[in-house]
Length: 125
Image 1 (tube, one colour):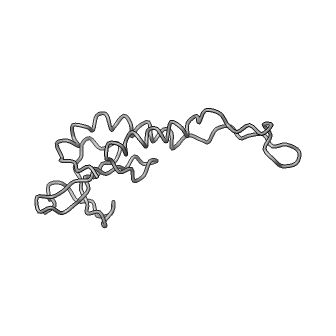
Image 2 (cartoon, one colour):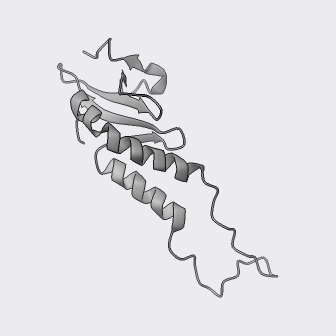
Image 3 (cartoon, one colour):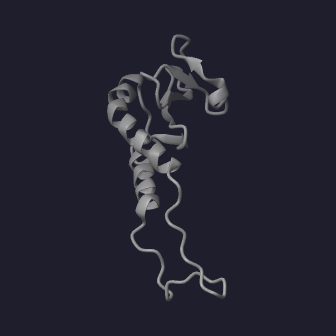
């Protein structure tokens, strides 16, 4: 698990913001065109599966781009992510960012979730 400092997470935010924006677009997109159904109720297509991967393939790629950086994606539709961090006492916590926020200004303990978000002005110990 990668451990982020606030400075590192803040420096990564411009790139991460772009990835999260794209993630939200893809998560909100309707599924691709429905496959036609034959007269017997089975999908048509002569046994050929879907090609490419389209938006779902890109969605997976964006998720991977974030998770490979050590970012935890909590809610793709809302753009909620966490950066794992460690307090000076050695306790793990999460820097929390929601798409649309100007900066990383919140944190929470892993077991507290979004409801336990605390402003960084009241830092973890």
